[in-house]
Image (cartoon, rainbow, N blue to C red; front, side, top):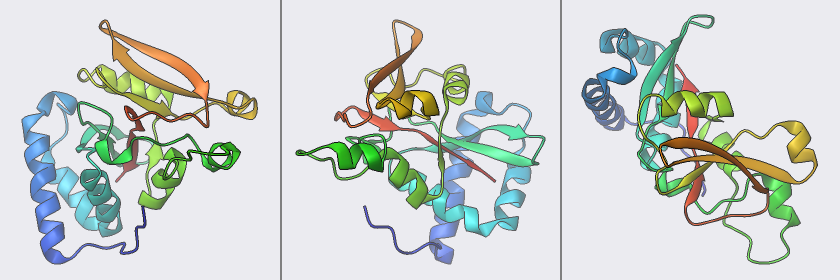
Length: 188
């Protein structure tokens, strides 16, 4: 995935804001105490955040506000697509894992794409919080930020929701599956 242009046209900006506002209003339970006017003011004050949000949208993430970070004074956007974002699946965990594979390498890695887009991969706590706002990854799974001690041993972790329960699993970091992607977050 080659991502070159890092700013939106005026038309692209307007279209993205319209999409985000529509989603925000449709899913009020994700952000009950937050007003769209405040989110939009933050987006207008930080126009460099629009490009990563657009990339989240273009890759199927359906980003939405799920909270406000009082410490940093920023809104938290997370991929809220029902399933792991379609444009970010079939990826091994990171570049070291990709290099470890001798054959049948995936096109890219979860951490590389997150860095290219300018977002962070969710950690376990963030993933579990997202699952309190809806039912996500009922058919797919999502890589999550792997603790260093697990990664050092060659593993990586992912989560999904089955049987109305959020599961936390492990796999070799070099593995990849058509139904496994990753969810990201962006602070605005």
